[in-house]
Image (cartoon, rainbow, N blue to C red; front, side, top):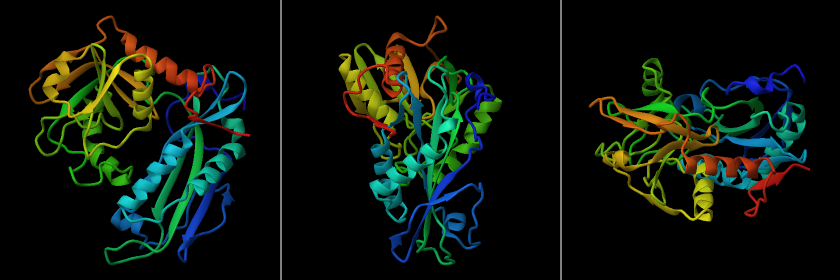
Length: 339
């Protein structure tokens, strides 16, 4: 596989050798199936196509300094998929099945895991959807779990360099009592138009505000938002925000380096009080933000004045990557070692 340009990989789909599948039929999960096909035969009346019964996860495997392969926070991703399945009434994926499917997909495609030190990783995408036919609005009675993988580079082309984002008020990502806290396909469909417009206007992503009052920060496009103020790591609390496993990890690391962590409503007016702000998630880890433009008022908030990520964001980013790549002790047992 030495013909892959590991250092210049985009964040996108990359064909690998195998994927793993498992069907839920007659109220039980079947055996894992290994496939080399990139396609799925699906009933034209499948609930995923009509009623949005579809959820996914994103996690990563890393080749460490010691040559070992580590998957970061596999169990937390399993829990989150279970929560998403509950939220839109799909079959629950037991943690052991999730684990076996992920490990099998990683092992079968081991040659696609980037070498240590290349700034790349193996992205793992489990997807669960209603494959059973329904015409009335009701849950399916059959589901399909697929896990596929592929090597990726940074989510934003800038990598760990500051990006600009745009506050939008004319689009909502999710309703307060809707599906925003689940990792379901419909939330991403709802964010597409605002995100594409922001890209055309020169921004890496958008900052959604709460749908009810338009006063509080919600999601930073496909990621969670955080801000550093003095000795505090502050991140929004909302029922319409997807609980980011990266954010959860960063909050623990922030406490470890002596920061006070606050998870609370964050007013858009507070943006001018932060010394550093960023977006965090599996795909990007941390994307430092240098500029936030309010599209309605043209008000600007500027950070990273020297053109570099702030010191706290940099420290947290380096700590998390060092744990993922086996450079420092994994004292919370976040990594699953692939045997």
